[in-house]
Image 1 (cartoon, helix red, strand yellow):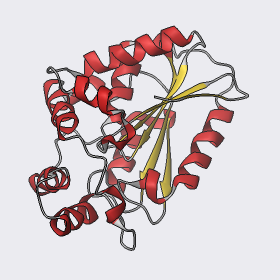
Image 2 (image 1 turned 30 degrees about the vertical axis):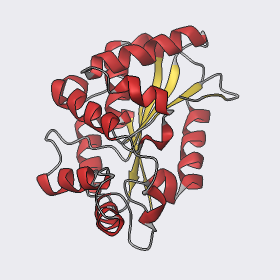
Image 3 (image 1 turned 180 degrees about the horizontal axis):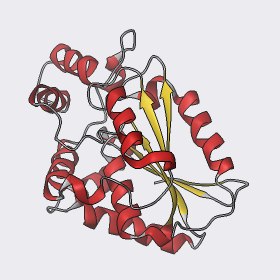
Image 4 (image 1 turned 90 degrees about the horizontal axis):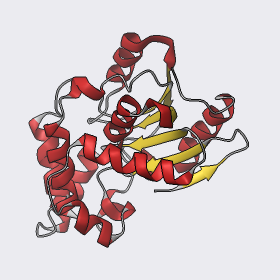
Length: 231
């Protein structure tokens, strides 16, 4: 987790997604030690924000982290100024079987590299991007724990992210989080959802277009105004 204090007085917390190179191995080990629900994971983040003592946070969730962010906003609206969903599968149904299979193959450290790269190119990267940058840094136990947590919590519970303002950062080419789903999400929740489409990117948008993602987050944070949780 990383917190960034901006001139707005807002704290940004980034919740990692599927690729656990964003997690320390010790965290990854404890993460997979027992079955946890999204509610459990959101409670962990709530404890971090409370310890920070810097008021409601702007919570950023990439990939699987988007559901943790939405659950936190649902369960603890007092701690959430706004949320950003980055490459977020906000559909009401789980990912299609071929997408899930490609994710599992991507994380299979015993599979040949060329097969893993092909799977990652399909499910995580836009055409022209090099999927080989994600060959290392995977923790399969973390991926399994994320899948269990996501399946244990019905999607209807965290779907709306409570009543928090939402910045939806949508990759242009993402089989896990499609552009049409972002449009449906905004239609369902209305003006509190702002959609920003990042060109030439897919689920690995934070790797493919880091500057564009950072610019969108910072611009939105600066518009939030004084830190106060949604009622």
